[in-house]
Length: 181
Image (cartoon, helix red, strand yellow):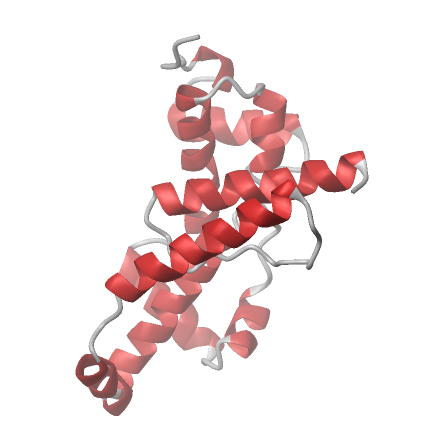
């Protein structure tokens, strides 16, 4: 495995660990069939997430009810969009139109339903989650700030810095790190 490719795979491993830590059990790591330590870790983490997901699965009865009620099924689709966004925070968010096509829901219903369910727009939620994840990583790890910006899906440190300062009222460097070396 090449150095940059291995770095990408390790980034995905860190992302999976973070998703498990915050209770997001839908995220999975794509397996490539390689015989490497990273691939073995990915297989183990996918298995853990699958087992945890089984424990938290809703009963068949409640899922049948949701499919019979259009409002509940719309809410379920919006929840899937919510989970999709949480699973793809390190990537640029696809357009609302692409989300509506992907999840087979009317674009207007998606926008208004998301706002009703989560009291924020889809794009604002996406950015808030990326910034919250960045703040968490700053306080709980010793990862350099520029790397945290990249991990959280920002293309440049300057964009990350401005957004972070606007949301939290301080720069990323002013946040106290809770780690003990």
